[in-house]
Every structure is written in structure tokens, then in C-alpha cells.
Amino acid sequence: MTVAPSATAVSVPAASPATACATVYWGSLTKTVSTHARSTSVDDVRTGRHACFDRLVIDLTGKKTGYTVKYVNALYAPGSGKKVTLRGGATLSITVNAPAYNSKGQPTYNPGATIRSLDYTTFRQLAYLGSFEGQTDWACPPGPGCRCGPSRWMDRAPVHGW
Image 1: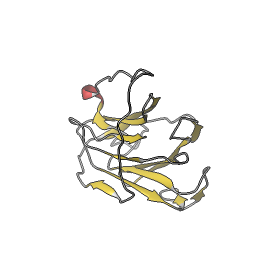
Image 2 (image 1 turned 30 degrees about the vertical axis):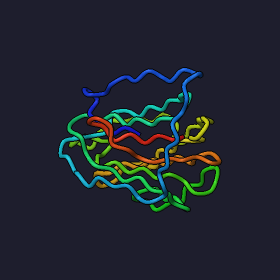
Image 3 (image 1 turned 180 degrees about the vertical axis):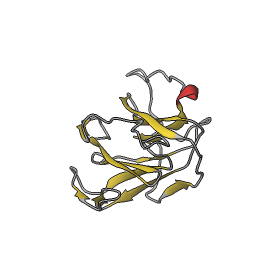
Image 4 (image 1 turned 135 degrees about the horizontal axis):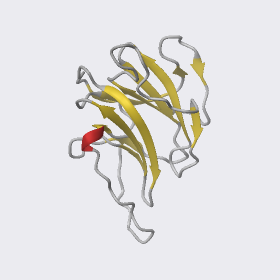
């Protein structure tokens, strides 16, 4: 996942099939950046499959803001508390400290399908759980043997799955 203002998004070329993949160990602890930026909203969400990793990028309009990424055993939609079921067991829960609506309550992000099947090497599905009280939530169940987690890179906070 990358949390960044849209204007600062940087393209990174995919690794070639001959690229040796580095071993990365994330652990399973919660990762949090507690920043809350005013007048920031979710603009778009993109995913990508690369030779060594899968990537989730959350584009924002406005300033950088915080996030929480953690593994959970059960998912619930924000606001309603409705249980959400995805494939697999433990799921990567992603919360961005920005709404998916503007100050007038109009949506700034349209996910299309609420649950998208990705079937990438490490990311199986992407579920948009909703946006409530200034936070927006997604979930991504990783595939078997996946090592997923956030890292700091330049002015963004990517979550990659290896």
C-alpha cells in the first residue's frame, strides 16, 4: 500500500523475471503512523503484480496522512459493524486516516466492486470496507506463505506482499 498525495505519486518499473528477489521479513505486529491531515481524502486505489511482490497504492488528494496496517482474524464494516467474509484465514486490514468523501459528504472515491478478485501471488482479493468518521478501510487476504507489511519509502508508506 502506498499512502501519498496524488501529485507526488512516482512510477516504479516492475522487476524483470530475471531479477533476484530480496528476502524481506515483516513480522505480524501492527504498524501505525498516527498522523491526521485535514482536507485530505481518498482519490483512488491501485494494485499491481510484480516479479518479486504485489503492491497496493492508495492515492490521496491533499497532504500525507497516517494509516494502520495489521493482521486480523475477523473483519467488520466501519459504521455498520456488519461482518465481512473473504477467502483465507488471517487478513491484512488497512485503515487510512482520510475519508473517501469531501467536506460536503460527496464521494471522492468509487471502488466499483466492493470486493475485487486479484488472484496475485500474495494478494488474493481487495475489499473496500467503507469510509466512516474520517477513516477509510480496506482488507486484503494474503496467499499462503505471504509476508506482507508496510514500509517507509520516500514520502510514501507502501504495503507490499512478498
